[in-house]
Image (cartoon, rainbow, N blue to C red; front, side):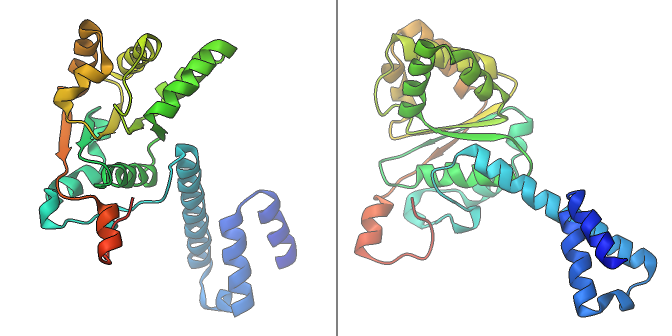
Length: 250
């Protein structure tokens, strides 16, 4: 009877229940449960298994470059990071309010790590997230226009509740990329959130975007409801080579 039950649980893809019931049988724990306790134990196991698999799918779909954690952010005094601000942003309520996060600072300072860590946190809370290197994303969109898959790619971006633009402003936008950026920003404005990391201060983004009228329109939509994180200090990569540190890597 138990073998048939296990087979049926596996066939119905109740993997959490399957493993919990199998383990309980092997350890003899079923004798310690009342009927309702056993049912609650199996349902809890199935719930946890489905939640964990959902989070794994969210993280996989986000296409992060590496794993990052809020708990491992380095709050060294010379970096100018407000611990309370990071903790507040980590609850991801900024996404439900359709707000943005702008993270700026010199190369290697940890911008990408903080942005990715918040992205991981959003995945664990059930939000749809997509991470992209800005230069690579717009190169891909150019190719998509050429092969006819542009609408498919932009529709995918529009569905994300949190879009992470990493390395924004590394190279100036040409006319085609500028138009695509405007389209993406317009589609997301007031409906979803972004995290943008850049080596350049926000005051320099006009020059990188180009075409003053379009740059004004883009920045007006990005900046007015944004949380700002301006990192200071030396490169974490150089510091890592000079002396061991306990937290954060990029």
